Length: 277
Ligand SMILES: Cc1ncc(C[n+]2csc(CCOP(=O)(O)OP(=O)(O)O)c2C)c(N)n1
Ligand code: SF4
Picture 1 (cartoon, rainbow, N blue to C red):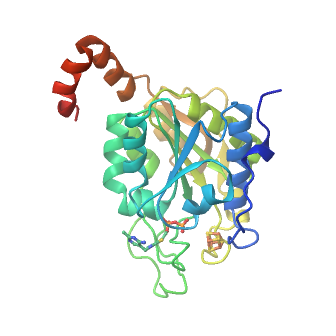
Picture 2 (cartoon, rainbow, N blue to C red):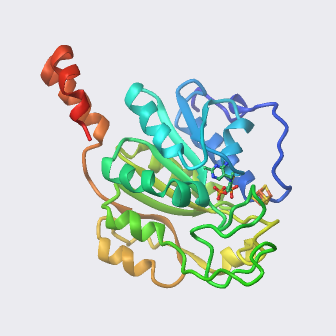
C-alpha cells in the first residue's frame, strides 16, 4: 500500500461538467494513477488551457497551471525545464492541443521532454457548444454545423508516430482500470508521452457516444510490438486500437540538458543555454 490514497487529491470545488460526461472517468483515472505511483499533490503539476478538459485539475488537489487555450503543452515544457523534479502532466481537449496548439504539439514531440500529454478527445469543441474540432469526423452534424463537417479529420496518432514520438497510447475514458495502467506507463516513460483519451461529450456530439466508442474500439493484442512502427500503422487502419500502441527509445531532452549542465559547469552552461532549440 502506497503513501497516498485517492482522497488525498480531493477538492471541494463544485463540478460543472454535465452528469454523464466522459471527463469523470478521466478524473478518477488520474487520481488513482497518482496514488498508485505514490506521486503526492505537491509533486505533480497539471498544465491546462481553456475548455471542459482543462477544468480537470480544478476538481482535484494538485499543483495547477491554467494558461491560454492551446498553449498547455508550451507551458508544460517551460515548467519541466525550470523544475525537472516535478511530474508534469497536460490535460487538454482535441481542439486545444491538436487545433490551436497543433504547432506546440508537433515540436514538443520532436523536443521530447519528459512530460505526459492526455488529450480528452471528444471530437468536438465542448465548452463552446459543439463547433467541429480537428478530430471531428467527416459529415458530423452538430447544432452549429448543420451542413456537416466538410474536411477530413486530423490523424493525431499517425502524426505522433511519424515524428517518432517516445510513447503513444489510446484509451477510452470509461475503462478506468485499464486506463490507470496506461497512464502509469505514460508517466513512467522517460520522454514525451501521448495518451489520446477517447471521451464522449454527451451534450454536443450525438454520434461518438459511449456505445459508438464501444462498438468502434478494440484492445491491442499483447503480442503487438510497440517498437514496430509499420505494425502500429496497420493497427490504426480500421477500428480504434486501445492500449500502448507505439514506443520509441530516445533520450529525453531534459536529461540531455542535465548532462550538459554537469559537463560545462554552471558558468559554461549559462553561456550555451540559449543554444538548446
Ligand atoms: C486562443 C483561444 N481561442 C479560442 C478560445 C475560445 N475557446 C475556449 S474553449 C474552446 C473550445 C474547447 O474545445 P476543446 O479544446 O476541444 O476542449 P473541450 O471543451 O472539448 O474539453 C474555445 C474555442 C479561447 N479561449 N482562446
Ligand atoms: S459539454 Fe460535453 S465535454 Fe462539456 S461537460 Fe458537457 S458532456 Fe462534458
